[in-house]
Image (cartoon, rainbow, N blue to C red):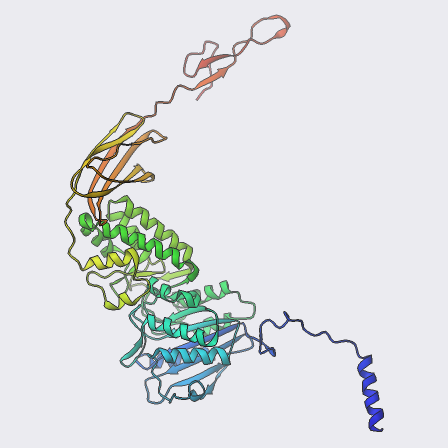
Length: 532
């Protein structure tokens, strides 16, 4: 066949062929470079094992290989162990590892990396999320941890939480990537409010454990199979927490510690920070009169392996129990509500014979016994009322210098406060409570001239009430606290008037006698009554 006839035949076949639908602009969502669908999950592990966890690093790599990457997930690891020149970058396969040269990540890298250098974390993330992109990106920082002070130990080097924040900010600036889906810590003591708050702009969710983790850490062979194409974010978050806690609870993985885990919604951290600030303001204010009581609340609150890290929720409960200030109780209630709003998943399990973690609620807060660590003041959370409270722990407290003389009377329906105060008091705060501790009225009054304002409170129910009167100076320190209890209110409501039909009277046309009003409780002469 001549070339001309061949071309003509091909053109005819093309014209006769059915049309092929091409994808529209929105049909390529989830494609990498417009060519292949992106996996649903990118699971990027920064494994700092150049320390006493070197063998556990190898064990966890084996766990990951039991599952490996597939079309739904990319599992990528940067690992360093305790040997020399043993840093490696892997894409984890099912029953295998696909190694990438470290020089492909950073041309200056040799075979022994410093995992405590934030630039190492930055460059790993840049490479891993670019070479192995995914719709949902999860970063796991793996190693020993000690709260905000350090994680990812490598010899004498380690990462601080502000350094992690800086590395993430640089990674996102270079790549243009948005926040990660999840930052998880396979490390001890990282379930702190301060850590989540520091990293809040770089992930939708933050994971951490309040307590020590067993050496075996996360159970990757249990978790990774759950990351499939149909897995939702909510299911993933539940799986991260539950697969870890349940592995130790059911004994499938032996471990020497009780376990805790939580995931926090970073969108709810600003409101939580505000309530913690308010709680700190109230704790600081009452130190002048109730320091011993505050110390008892701390001493009895849920503690973990670092005594300066206290369960936030439990601390607010103990403060309300030990400190007689309604202001502290109200502030603590606000913290608990805000923490509940921020908590996506929380689980804990107490290993028999080990530390009791039954009062764990997901987040610790830094609360040292006295002088705080200088590293605390590098944190974004070290502001506001909680910072002021921490500062006061190492300071000599001012002595109360103002006092109040209060008179509280009740006339049966109203509770009235009057009186005077001495010295330079600036503010008065009132709380009216019933016998169940419900706060029914809360008022603040600015002071001047030495006389208390006359305040009349009108409960809407009869009963016994308590009135707390708190006096503060210009610097916010509590000067005096007056408590009036057993304030009886009897509203003496008028007798209830009811309509009662009179007896039938023999009248024309069978009419019934007109109803008349009779006070309830008076004798009814028309006969017996089945009344209450």
